[in-house]
Image (cartoon, rainbow, N blue to C red; front, side, top):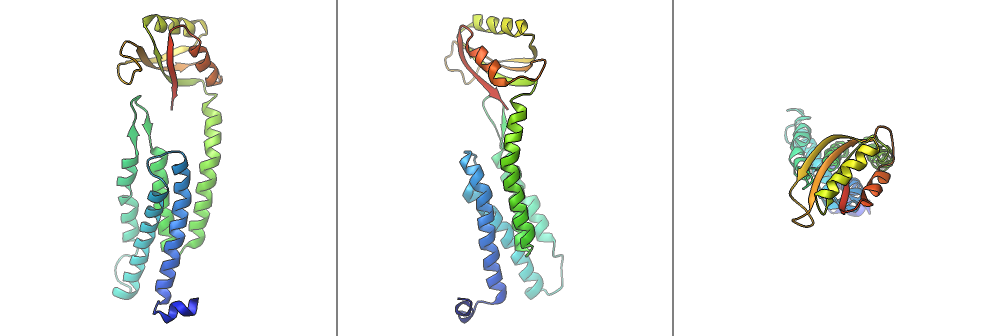
Amino acid sequence: MMNDLFALGISDFELTALCKLLLASVCGGVIGLERELRGRPAGLKTFSLVCVGAALVMITNDYIYTYVSPGEGDITRMAAQVISGIGFLGAGSIMVTGHKQVMGLTTAASLWVTAALGIAIGSGFYAGGLIGLAIVCISSVGFRYIDRFISERSRQIKIYVEGIDEEFMLRLEQYLSTHHIRVLSFQRQSENKWYDSDVCAMLELDQGKRKLHKTLLENIRNLEGFRYVEELD
């Protein structure tokens, strides 16, 4: 196989470049797959392209430094431009939902680290790229469960709640007062309601001690006049 490639006129540099780009595509795709499965705006193809693009920049940088202008110029300049330039993709993946939730920060960070992996692979630092890939994958899965465990039991909780009338809000306030749940903030909402006549609000609450959030949400669902409740990140 190798002899066939050399017979086609493929140089050592080009063969190495091919291997680097294939590895970058796989590494970027692995990270993007996790985002794809979670329904995030940037998925497998986006991450693969980012990693391949970053690797290609480093390969081109190496080619220029080796063949076009041997030993001249700053070999790190193009890598620096990749790191700063990836910001526009990260910014595009961050959005604010109708409930004023900021989403996409993890996707933006993943895009940035994927570009870094591409730079490592493109510069020939294969061990760094593969170790980085392993750490990113392990931390993405592991920290997700740790974060969920902690957030589900934290004292503070932010919710979006909707009821059929003002009486529901009074019942909600009475419930919170009875169970010594302090209201840190209360903001009325007029958008994204199930029905125009509904009343809805975003509340930030302090339960006083660590409790399962799902218990509070279930108790709110049992209030008369309840329509909808959602925990906000």
